[in-house]
Length: 93
Image 1: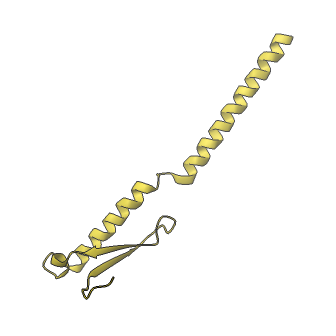
Image 2 (image 1 turned 90 degrees about the horizontal axis):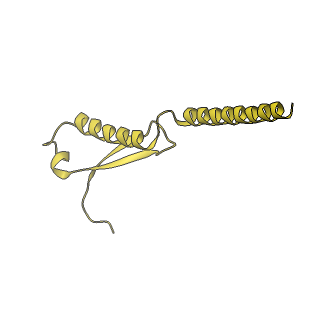
Image 3 (image 1 turned 135 degrees about the vertical axis):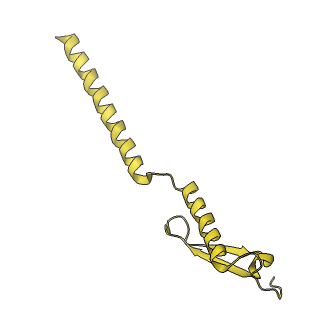
């Protein structure tokens, strides 16, 4: 249901569209009227909130850290298999 009121909305576009495309902030009426601060303060605060959210949901390192972990696990498995084969060879000889 739409009422006859208007709100001030700040739209922040995401630098990483994999997480979200845009964030919408509805500015409080007492702040939006110019009493609470200039426009650049409102935009800066909205951008900081969006940035904090992005940093909280996207792990540092991302794909690179996952690939490194996979490579290390594979290398460890190969070392264990090679060590077991060497022990078996020495026990038979």
